[in-house]
Image 1: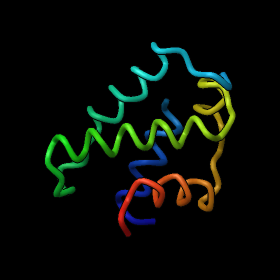
Image 2: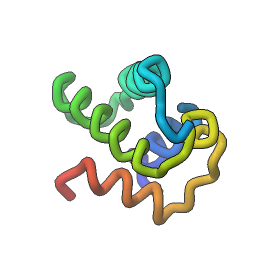
Image 3: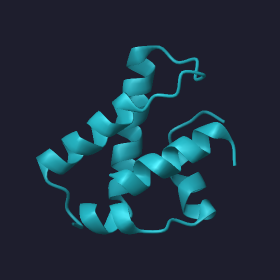
Length: 87
């Protein structure tokens, strides 16, 4: 698993079928605070990446608390990440 995938997995694990505004804000704050130093993205691009991850994570149809405690398979994690990258 590459560093970005590992980072996203940790982020997703640490973050209700319908998330409240506070839960979405918490997810985004966690994402923005955990930017790996070896990722060459400017702040705006990384913020956009975090927003994308939040939107894609909501599509799992899990509550926020369930989402945080879910053991995502590599396949589901990769699907979320790939939808937010140009790779």
